[in-house]
Image 1 (cartoon, rainbow, N blue to C red):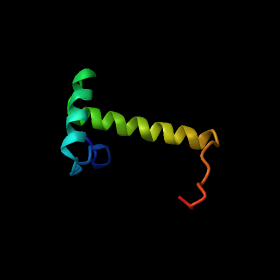
Image 2 (image 1 turned 60 degrees about the vertical axis):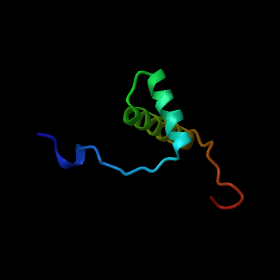
Image 3 (image 1 turned 90 degrees about the vertical axis):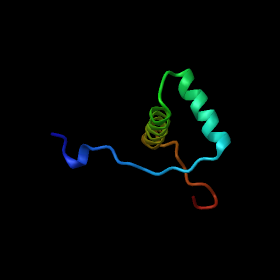
Image 4 (image 1 turned 90 degrees about the horizontal axis):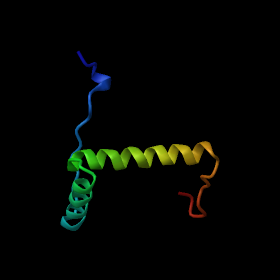
Amino acid sequence: MVSKDNEKKQVLLRLSPSLWKELVKWAEDDFRSLNGQIEYLLTECVRRRKKSFEEGSSVLRQDGD
């Protein structure tokens, strides 16, 4: 039995038609479902962000973001 903490969360995501088409094509090129492609891209972005923080290369921008 899977614990509640390990269950995947569902998210409603609104995309422009043009972005949706691009993501579908990209997913097909990578032999993934659209959902799988979005999850892969988000996972990669989080991994890269964590890596940049670990390397100390992330600096606050002048506008405070």
